[in-house]
Every structure is written in structure tokens, then in C-alpha cells.
Amino acid sequence: MKALIILAIMATLSIIFIQYNGNKNLKKLFIALVTFGIIISLAVVGNLTRQVMPIFIAHIILILISWAGLIVYLLRDKYYWWIIFSPVVTIGLFLLLEALTGSGHDIG
Image 1 (cartoon, one colour):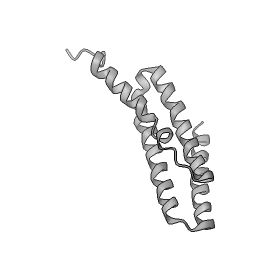
Image 2 (cartoon, helix red, strand yellow):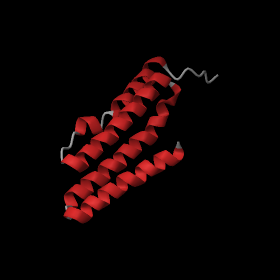
Image 3 (cartoon, rainbow, N blue to C red):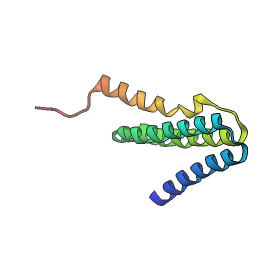
């Protein structure tokens, strides 16, 4: 599974740089790299939601959908920002639930 994730990351970066070599569009390269960094950051921060499994599964699905949104941007030049930033919803929902119900751990 880890090897598949690394291969997907390498394939995405390869697509980004191959397209840059083809059309030399610096703006598209910058937007794609920043978006890719944000998606990876959201995936890492999403591990916070692992305590609540339904939210975590929804987060993983939204990460995959946002990754697909980046690929759509690379292939068709259509930037669907609301799809790409959708994993923020699950993180926000988790933080809201933690604020309302607490962490469930008694400190003493």
C-alpha cells in the first residue's frame, strides 16, 4: 500500500513536469505544485481524524477525489477548487465534534 502511494505521488509529479516541459506554462506549473502540496498536507493532517472511523474514511475518499480534481486540472485546464479543497470539510467536522463532545479522555 505504501509503495502504491509513493508511485501515485511520483506519477503525479511526473505528469506535472512533463506537461511543463511540453508547454512551458509557468503559471500552471506553480498552481499544480501548490495544489499538490496542499492535497498532501490535507492528507497528513487528516490522520487527526483517525479516531472517528466514519469521518476518517470520508476524509480518505475526499482526498482521492481532490487528487482526481488535480489530474482534471492538469489534463483539461479546469480548476475545480471546491473539489480540491473538500477534505477540509472532514477536518472541520472532526474538530467541531471534538469541541462539542470532548476528546473522551479524563485527565484526572
